[in-house]
Image (cartoon, rainbow over all chains, first blue to last red; front, side):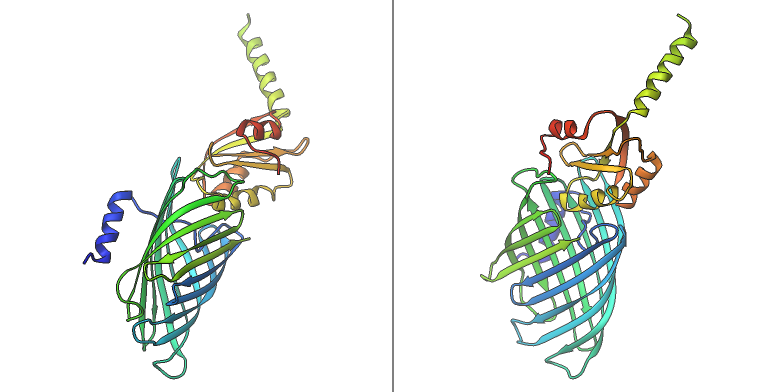
Length: 217
Length: 110
């Protein structure tokens, strides 16, 4: 069986230098709202405001529903996102983001509310035809430690212009720790965006819906 | 011909061009995604001298139409685009109307 780390390694070799893109921070003085439905195992809502182009503050709520143990965890957190580095190339952009935060968690395997911390990083690289993103996100409390690793590779069938709808075909590979889901979850996604609105939806190898919406204003 | 006279004429022509500049064209690195370039347009439209903004991902170009008799210093433009997260390569001024730039880029007026 191919390990997830081998898939990531192979992808990185194929696309060369992997850097990051602008998901947790859209632009200076901009607000970003993100909603994700992750194949029944993860649901997340986030809102961030960026006083400057290189950091944003906000919070979110994430719910994990294990399809292995039927356990659930719900975490509400405040978070700071920071753009560690951006490469503005002539025909490409690449970024590395990091983030950290804290909040409270409830769950079916423990009582009361536990203090939880959140940390993660994202690297992505984008031209007008190729997109790659690698993200790791950790939610940790005394009762659980859940890490979600996500790789996305995208190809645009045409080079969109500023005032056009952008279309991307994206393949996503995701792994969860802490018995949320066994194995690598792979999804084929269609991404569309125009102006400040972005939607992405598709189906996983388990036949479940994977969807995300993002709005910048 | 007297070289000082040639220089004077050249300076006058340059001054005339600058005085009548109606548009600023900037070539920008990292301009690959409409979703991200939104921030540039938002920032440039905040300048009181801005009449209109055109962005071309194909040409990696950001053009600003100026209001009559107004201007935005290069330093302010560089600062705005740097603060939006992009790298400015060149800044050029011309008297080309913004709609002519739109036509050149194959864009229609919104």
